[in-house]
Length: 288
Image (tube, rainbow, N blue to C red; front, side, top):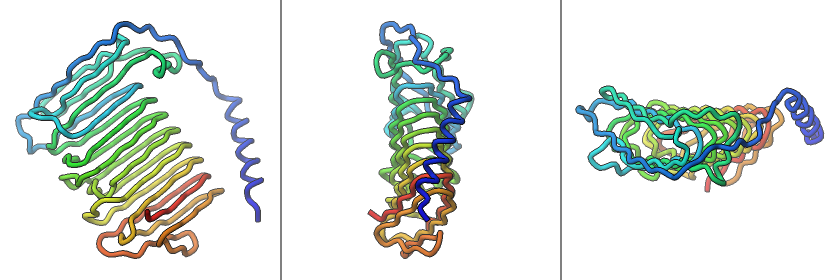
């Protein structure tokens, strides 16, 4: 049975229905001024063995995070040309919050042309629960070599590249990522040393690459709307993917073996168990 005409009809109907109930705000003019740069330096907590609760709240612009803070929990800079974007840092014991200043946006500001809001921060390798709440932005995260015990990311329409190029030095209990209509790449996930990964997304393009050194069994739960998802698990790993999707296409290349809606990869050591639930779209399983 050819499902493509059915899928197209449903998609057109959904888009027409959505269009009837959506009010779209055009990009608004934002009053800008001279670019200011604030240095951010958050001292290490008194007890560096206690887990630090670090939260970052970022509206829109460019956010870069990487290891390398020396003698500080967080160090770096924030550059902005809208006065109300000035970041605020608050600390209470091992609880640290870095928040972008408030600005009442009626629509979508044109960051590409004139609005500047760039954070470039380095993080220390002390035990940390990290939470990132962001809007429509571009993010570049390198978490390799840190000591993250829990990681939570929530964002809107985002363009994000996240990597664990080295082993996370703590056992991470949960990595939870919730995003809107975005383009997100997660790399080196075996190095993240995760027990449970939860990924929720709207329409978009997503890549989850489980390369690295797998320390223990990992459970992965993926839920997505109409999207394209690529999952990469290196050959030699033991992996199992259960797929639950409506009008979706699944392709598997490399050493993946298919049995109904279950796809397995034979290997040794710990196992990655992945449940994928998709409304519609494409799922691509690879072993590259």
